[in-house]
Image 1 (tube, rainbow, N blue to C red):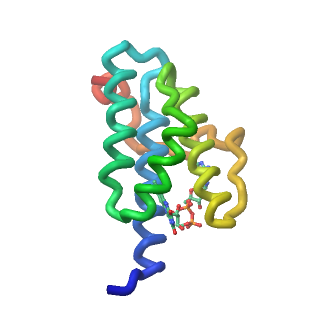
Image 2 (image 1 turned 180 degrees about the vertical axis):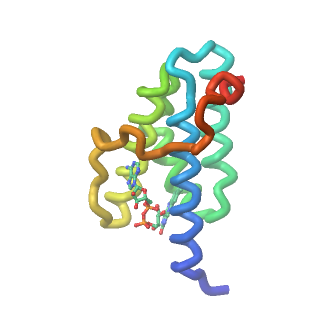
Amino acid sequence: KLGNETVKAELGRATWKYFHTVMARFPEKPTEDQKEALRSYIYLFARLYPCGECAEHFMHHLSKYPPQVSSRNAASGWACFVHNEVNAMLGKPEFDCADLGEFYDCGCGGDEEASEG
Ligand code: FAD
């Protein structure tokens, strides 16, 4: 069966939005358990990503640039960096990670503590 680039790109956009929003909501000062949860999540996310070719590429990026989980800033900056690696591979422009700011807002307001478990 032929691939469908439009569908693949749509899945990519939705996934990146979710992925970066997870990082934007990660605690500023995570516990060891929260760090381990994020690290596991990222490896499983890569392994289970529905586009097999993308998953393979992304796992390669992960082995070169292991997830940074020490803080929200570290995680968001790392995710921006690896997304830029994918952008470069696909010939897309680099995103300025200094512009991340409030770009990925979950719309969930003040429920931060509830989301940190
Ligand atoms: P996207 O790259 O989807 O980005 C969406 C939006 O995020 C952009 O418009 C911009 O506002 C913002 N953004 C861009 N860069 C960053 C950044 N560095 N940090 C934060 N925000 C940013 N496609 C393939 O063809 N081959 C692959 O191997 C492949 N691997 C992928 C691996 C993963 C894990 C994911 C999630 C997607 C992968 N894709 C792959 C899809 C590809 O990355 C794009 O999602 C798709 O091509 C659509 O691109 P886009 O130009 O709309 O922007």
